[in-house]
Length: 150
Image (cartoon, rainbow, N blue to C red; front, side, top):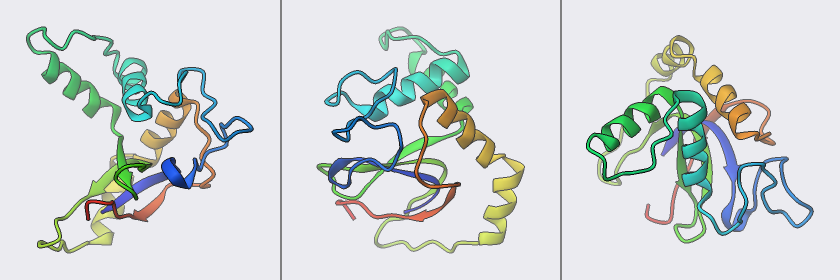
């Protein structure tokens, strides 16, 4: 998988962000329990703060469509990499994922044009502000990652 964004770490590797307690746990105002699903809570916060989507009742007609539209408005996604049981995470504005049997041709000039025209850096910066996360990585980058299922 190739993604443009920030490697946040997590799992066995530890977190690659500055917002940690002395014991290495997340220290974020909105994340209260190390055993809670970080990505689920982070995505919820982004949908609420950026897209104004605060619905919680998934049984209401149209919920999934509205949630997905809010996710598209946010403009970033989390992707897991590394060990499938204890994954690390990247916050990405764009992800290219291929199967083991179907390689993809990467056109970096096209990706660079899309990065600029779709303001991927701005979307990532906004998400980091909303999540109150300071990554150790200085700026967004192309990340080549694998996962336990690869």
